[in-house]
Amino acid sequence: MSCFQGSSKSSASEEWNELKQYMEKEFERLDKIIMRQEETNQAKKMEMFMMLSSKEHLDDRCKEMLEKLGRDLFGN
Image 1 (tube, rainbow, N blue to C red):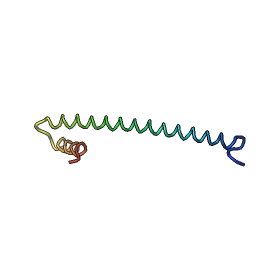
Image 2: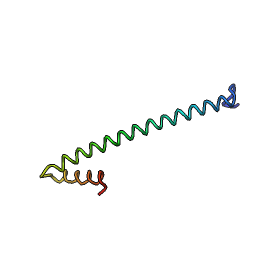
Image 3: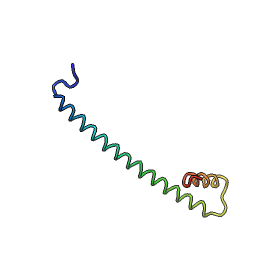
Image 4: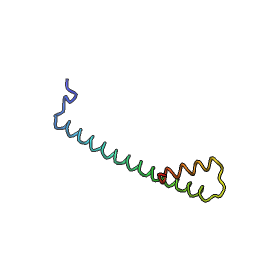
């Protein structure tokens, strides 16, 4: 028995194309969400970097965080 029994090949093809288009749109939507989240994360890192770099005396933990943020943001 065929899984397309009771429907023509063309309607199965149309259904497949509709599903494919839906999935492509869904992937595009998810890509946009991911991009916005990455931009938000970068902005938060920059804000934290600016805050830490403006302080004169940092403990070791804060110095490490500042260095890591610098590498993440600027690739140094």
